[in-house]
Amino acid sequence: MSKIAGKRYTIKDIADMAGVSPATVSRVFSGTPGVNPEKRQEIKDLIKKTGYHPSSVARSLVRGKTNVVGLIVRDLENQYYSSMAVAFQKELAKIDYIPMVMSMNAVADEMGGGNRLSELIGLFDFAGLFITVSAKESVLEEALRECSCPVVLLNRTFNIECDQVVQNDYRAGAIVAEHLLDLGHRNFLVLGDFKTSISQRFRVEGFQQTLAAAGVSLSRENKLECPMERTEAYKTAKVFFERRKGELPTAGFIVSNNMALGFLQACSEAGVRVPDDISVVSGDNPPIMSQPGIDLTTISISLESMASEAVKMLKRRIDGKGTENDLVVLQPELIVRGSSIEAADQKRQKSGRKK
Image (cartoon, rainbow, N blue to C red):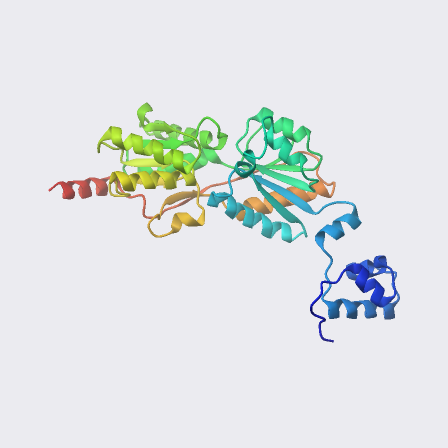
């Protein structure tokens, strides 16, 4: 039987063709019993012929609940979050749920004052919600009080009553310090957003405490703080290079991927060569970090693992099987690339250029 082209058929169209009610067509499509075998086969043939497939919205209305899950991220222009959205889309598809991805940066200008997170959550009737944004605990608590669906927090460690999937940010910073110390570096800079990002704060704490255990300190002037934006990181690094006039630390920990890209831009404009003049390690590992011309050593947390664990948590809640709040901690991995080399190599390269 060839497919009928040129029209998008509805469940009512199929029902009219078969001389049955839309509910009967729905039972056939879902495999529910209670339909005469001959009529069931006739309806199946019509479904195949027309190419009919029920929309997810229509099925949600029939069930009396939505299958749309919200994923609220900080900034979709950041490749880390767009990669996260892809990972969650794949996992949610396995359980027949659809993600609606929303960027807090994108909606900020459209909403007035107050708790924008609460306003955003209140716009839609989600089946569940994943939240990964930089927000104060009080802001999250207020938003969650307004939320009527299950919530899983991602990469945010708070004393809040909900499920959480987090990465071990302290260990991530410690791994970076261990790597650079092993390469012989003793003079460091750190660039991050320590005021608004708890995740970055933990990474820097792990980094500094690991240095301290090795008898190495991070000078205050080499601890650079700025908002978690590529342009802000670029501006901050540019000022730093202008002030230091070539007297640079031999290694830098740039705590997030977007900031690392801004830092690399400032390096290029200032004539600071990576890794010849300064070894650089970034705190995240989206695909762009492995590209030629960037080639950054990074800390990697599997977004696929994060999505898998978070979707399992949410599904348990949706099915009414969750009791105690769950906490899953994902462990980081160091991905070594061309942006970090031994301090001795840097000295030899610098010495060779002076001759």
